[in-house]
Length: 68
Image (cartoon, rainbow, N blue to C red; front, side, top):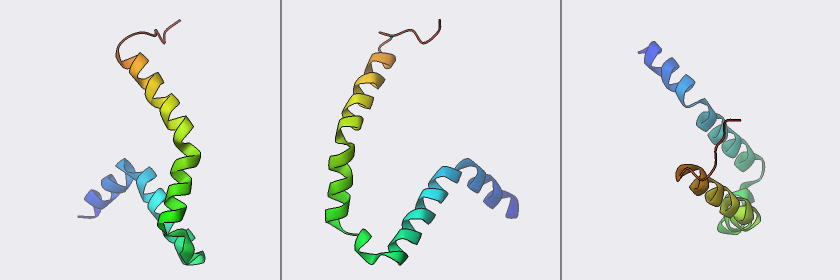
């Protein structure tokens, strides 16, 4: 059982850290968990999301060669 937990934490470490950070911030400032904050985060990162989706599409269809 202990080995399964260790493998899970190793495989999903970034998600565990993200959840711990969100919980820590929510404890420190309960207003963090609100729709207004979530909307602001999405608005601030929307440009990066659009650029990342476009770049991902180019890479997926083979329009760019990453090897030099």
